Length: 262
Image (cartoon, rainbow, N blue to C red):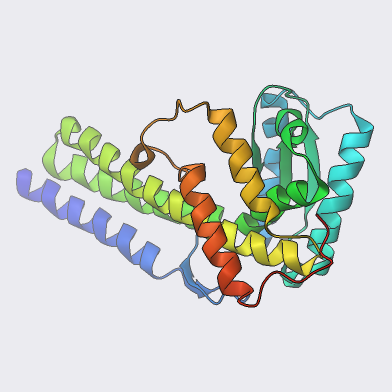
């Protein structure tokens, strides 16, 4: 009986691993070799199908027409005048009515949201562009599709563990380990999106140093009450700011060009 379980477990694990490692493709915009679970068309369909429910969970869309028009104008400029224009994704830029939460996020395929709370904390168009550019970076880097592929692999391996051992305690431990792995990738995703955001913002004519000011805003909003960084999907804003400064120096070794919008 135990031998039969082990055989089934091995088969499940092999299928999960082969499926994951056979979905490798090269991102034409970043040049990165990625393992993704969805095609760009599927990402777009999933993102726009999920958008209404996600907006509802955050209090719905803002009724502030001026704020909505500002975010849409800046977002469209970024999407039109940067590397994002070469992507197959359909970007939309939305303001959520939540006045307290400091947040912004992107769904697969192009829907991007920013809360009223975060928007009110920003002090310039360039800072708004920095937030939106970072979220565009998540979309063109295909982070959602990458994470879905990793989750499918994790779930398959955990299923194999349960079948092979019959021990659900082992599965629970595996879930914790798998969650920590996915968090690590999440932090790397944030840093990659920061780097892409710097490029997107600068190509659209905004000063990328505004992203440093955004990190300062996020640090103040946290009030020093964050959980340890290794338990978070996001790097600490202070650490991100240092990485952003280094990335700006790398991209502009002779200094940020003059005349960019502040």
